[in-house]
Image 1 (cartoon, each protein chain N blue to C red):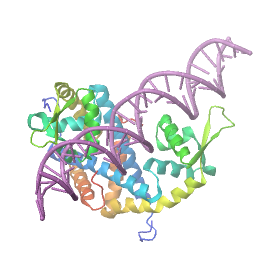
Image 2 (cartoon, chains in turn yellow, cyan, orange, brown; image 1 turned 45 degrees about the vertical axis):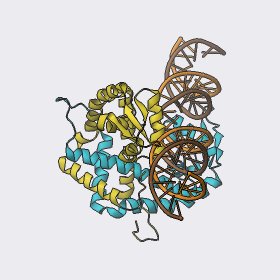
Image 3 (cartoon, chains in turn orange, blue, green, cyan; image 1 turned 90 degrees about the horizontal axis):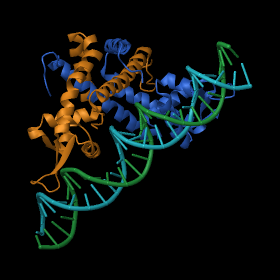
Image 4 (cartoon, chains in turn yellow, orange, cyan, purple; image 1 turned 90 degrees about the vertical axis):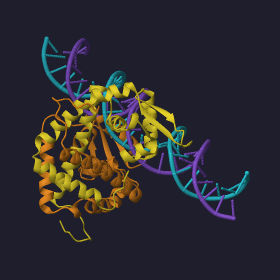
Length: 157
Length: 157
DNA sequence: GGACCATACATGACGTGTCACCTACCCTGC
DNA sequence: GCAGGGTAGGTGACACGTCATGTATGGTCC
C-alpha cells in the first residue's frame, strides 16, 4: 500500500499482477518445453542453441560468441553443449586461430531436429500468446519489457 | 529455420516482444534469486514454500495442499521439502487423520529466515518492476497475464 | 625469452525440476 | 473381510543451471 520507502509492501493490484506474471511464466515455459520435447525431442535450451547455430556462418560458432548471443554464462554453454554432443545434435571443433578456443557446429541430426521442431514451436507460441493479444498490446508489452530490462540492477545472466 | 507458407512466422513486433519477455524473465528470476540467497540464504522456491507455511494454520500444511497452493507437482514438493528439511527450515510430521498423509511445518529457523528475507525481497520486486510502471500499466498487465493464463493449452504444472 | 596476468573453455559439486515408478494407505462393493 | 481401484506421498534417474575452480593458451613487459 504505502509507497513510502519504509514500508514497500505491494498493493492488491501489484500483488495480483505479480502472481499472474510468475504463474504464467512457469506455465508457458513448461508447456513450450513439453510440446517441443514430445514433438522433436528438444528442450527449450536445445532449441535456443540450435537457432543460433543455424543462423551462424557454416553452422558453427565460437563458444564465447554463442554465450554472448544467448546471454548465458560460458560454463552453462559448456555444460549444455556437452550434453547436446552426447546426443549428436552438435559437435565440438578446435579453433586453429586461437588454441584456447573451440567451435560448436550443428550436426545433421541437429539440423533435422530443429527443422522438425521450429514450425510447431512457433505455432505454440502463437497459440499460447499472440492469438490472445491485439497488435497494440504486443507493441505495448514489447515497450514495457524492454523498459524493465534496460533498467539497472538486473543480472545479465 | 524453415519458413513454410502455412506456418505463420512471428512478425517483427512479435519477435521483439517475445525476446524481451523471455530475456526479462530469466534476468528477473536470476536477480531475485541471487539477492535473496545473499540476503537470507533462501532460494526463490524456498521463499514460496515458506510464504505458504507462514500463512497456514499453526505454520503447517498437508503436502498436497502445499502442492495445490504453489501449483507444483507433488513430487516436486516432496523433493524440495526434503532438501529444506536437511537445512532445518521445515520439519515433516505424520498425519493422524490419514495414514498416507504428511504435514510440513515451518521451523524456527525457517521463520527467522523468511522474516529476514521478506522485506528485501519485496523491495527488490518493487525496484526491478513496479518502480518503472504506472498504476494503469500494472492493472493492464495484470489483466493481460490473467487472460493468457486462463486460456486452454497451458499445463498447470 | 621468461615472468606474469588475462582469456577461453572445461569440470565437479551441488541445488533444482520432471518423469516414471513405487509403497502404503483409504474406501467402496460385494 | 477382502478385492480392486484410487489417493498421498516418496524415490531414483536424469536434465538443467550456478558457482568455484582448474588447465591451457595468448599477450605483454622487462
